[in-house]
Image: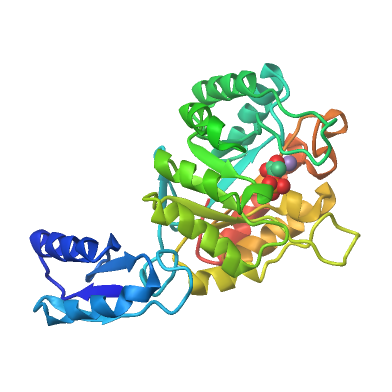
Length: 338
Ligand code: PEP
Ligand code: MN
């Protein structure tokens, strides 16, 4: 249920309503908008009628049900777009975020070189996987903790914040020590114990859509993080499985306007995994920005032919720089900027 307070309700009044909600066995999530404050009361739906009694409080304007199954992630609860702060940059505002870097951290030299090149081209976040979710157990699994140290060094050298994947609840603390944004990969979007653990860190979370996850299921996964007390969720559309074999996945650009309608959370698009081929990355990156995405995550590798993962979809640094110039032009056309 959403408890809408009259405009001008004081902090003490907001607190008092929260206490009453909690006394009824619900969790109270206060969302302060520009005009008024609303409190999302989330918990077991069965007792929700009791919450209606809060309407008798004079500074409560209305108590209304949240119709979507996801609650804190929905536009019903929060009309204004959410922005996620990451080390001095803001994801979800007028400025687009471009996260770029190798699929996997392969060596100190490789990640430092890519970091420097993507920064020079205008990227604002460095990506790089140290723990890699590989389809085959015989494929390169990542440099793990050693890779996290190289990412630290790349941040020191370039000032770029780091997004890197965490795959297991037991590794959340160690990855969170090094990462500025914790990536939840497509294969873990419904790993609910992992979602609960990343919520506890309060660090920004990049939540990739699963390859077979509906938008509703994906937003329910975001709900796990929000309900766990972490409001800093960035959604990432990275392609879904369809019958089409010429691309690795089918990038679902529909998800951008749909998510914007249903949710206040920012959404970025991954045209690298979404297509699986470097030649298609530019077209889909531009299309994503034109469709209203808040940013992109793009794989860049100095020598894609030697990459230990996802070489075929990685851009060389020079091409990435050219793509960035075109992204800037499309951004301007739709009232955004890099
Ligand atoms: C990645 O970002 O390298 C990755 C493994 O992505 P996804 O989880 O979307 O497949
Ligand atoms: Mn990859």
